[in-house]
Image (cartoon, rainbow, N blue to C red; front, side, top):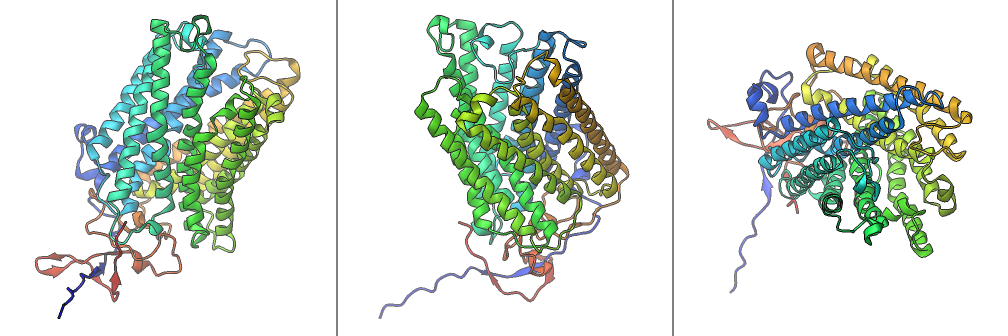
Length: 578
């Protein structure tokens, strides 16, 4: 008689591990000194080094923006000539896009939070992670050299044939951005591998935080799209050095081909910037609504849908470049299509807040600002996707306003929401809620004063990138410039209270927001290796109707013959991750 073998069971013994409050030892003081930071493979410290670098570039890019707005106070020349103006707006765009917006959430917040949210000790390739940071720094050094040795006046898009023939240090600038691309690719590969292979026991795909889904989608874009930018900049360099005639029409090349190459990367790059922000907003809204997220799978799949469709819409930047009517119609349709998964997210966030127990702390306030401003950016993007409208608005201040409502009004606000949300976890200190809310309101007022008038200017025909303008637009420009000064004041206030918080702020509890997410189930700041135990996941990260004790579980381990952790009366079966 045949006997069947007993199937192995997945049941494990779990215990509750309460996070330590106000720990004396943590990742910030266990390994100290400049050399320890420079050689660290701790994802948290690497994330903080990215954060410091991003703060520097945001400051430089922001000051350049204020210089531009000051020059535009009057219709004629104020204090700089046209060549200097072109160099400054080129540097503002290149620094903000390539050195702040693209790496901001993935490299800084993502590096710090991803392993904590997954329940692992570090990313899959810690040394590659450190190498990614140094590649970023090397790219930045080359770019700063370009700034100091002649500057660049091509605009941040480096359009040919002008960029292939103009003076200035275009090659050094493009080399810096070329190098920077490898940092983005390596970070993407690292995150994809970590999400696939290092999730905690029980963390199946339907229990993955939505921030992880967003970083996963972003990493796919980084890996697939960034090589196209590298090839494009390499071809531009060959055009300048060897005159091979790829883009120069005088040599038989096609300048529109450059636009196709550049925007095939740069439109997905828009989603590299904004999709991680979507993940942050999902975390913040659920936490401060004290409610399970509405439509988990719709939000998760919409991130992947945006990543996929984002590769197909680059042609809407080129409606006036001589494409065929059929191509324009297809790209216009796809532009409308990519708005659907974004609209799904916004609907689900609003539905999550509906009848929730909303706590309007600073991260939630930034999330509300994000929703208001990003929706304006999204609706105006639909307008620009309409062929008849875009013909009139192309290359006007309407496009400038739209881009800034998406990038600064959307992505930067999401970044600030995440920074304030995870600041207690990063540094173990609380900031002043009063000053933080005051700063957020100042930034909100200043931002809308700056960019709302630009929609009006653009619709009336004011071209972008113009050094001088006619008198009828002066009042709009003056209002916009005053708004930019207000934004600057808001950010200086933010810098002040965060700096004060770092040195003299009140100590933060392990979970000051009462979140159910895994990163809040360890001390603030976290231990050097994140978890002293192996976390076990039995609930989703947004199950606020479940008791906190069920989110603090770990595999029961023995030390000196005794079980570590508080015994809990839970019998659970942990499913395989895959």
